[in-house]
Amino acid sequence: MNDRSMARRVRFICMTNRSGSSWLCHMLNSTGVAGFVGEIRQKGQPAKEWREKRDVDPYCVKLNWHMMQRVWPLMTPGEAAGARYVFLIRRDKWRQAISQYRARASGVWHLWAGKPIPARHNQVPFDAGAIRSIRNNLIAQDQQWGAWFRKRGIRPLKLYYEDLCRAPVATTRLVLQYFGLPSGGPINMYTLLVSRDELTEEWMRLLKEEAHEPSPAAPAV
Image (cartoon, rainbow, N blue to C red; front, side):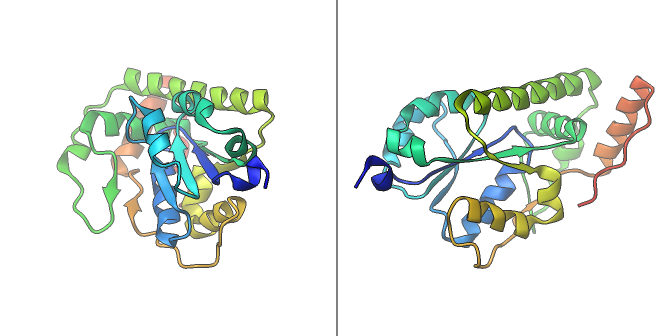
């Protein structure tokens, strides 16, 4: 056998924060066929965690551009040759930035189905400057991902958060098929809640008023 046929199947979900990556991971995990699906927890020691999970196959990792710079050199030639990449993007950068700002400020990163929403999720003060800065950073990260893929001749499966919201199960099946995994089993989509709410839309109105622009409608989900 060659090195590629013996290598474990490495699958990447390439993302920016608040682009639906956690929800997608939970749905992939619910299938029971995707092996490990999640992020590298030992942020300071990704090489250690990578080695510890060397026998996990398939190994599906979600990560941002900065973590990819540390993980990419850890792959064997066989893993690199067989790796597949999903590039998860959120079109609406304003609402993505609002979501990121609220999560950072409140410490509430996920809203779980069937559990109360923590009060502090709705107690974050509005800060237009912070939201704009986050938006600019998110745009820059998408551009970094695009340049990284082009430099290596990688053509990822490009998915959009808005499409994931509209058709979560179908989108998850598409990812499973692309990853070369069974896609016909049940998928539990009722794990995480969309964090966008009335406060998000109020802040959108305030941001657009500052810019003297009409506030665009929220995308359908």
